[in-house]
Image (cartoon, rainbow, N blue to C red; front, side, top):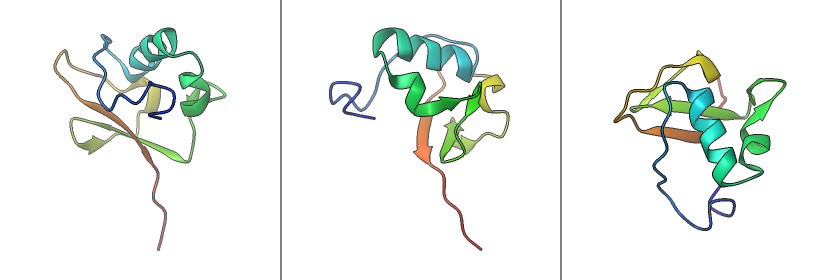
Length: 78
């Protein structure tokens, strides 16, 4: 994602849900949303962590005013 964010590793945006965070990032870095979202849900190959915990609520997951949101490659295995 750093290619889309001009090499920045941390970006401050406002939002109360992961959806709002993604929308704010898309506004600042066009194309970001297409890398994360498909059919109005987080892509299966992407995991979202809020404050260090992987969330299952996807775009509906709540985000606090001081939360850290990370978009990570999803891991699979058995």
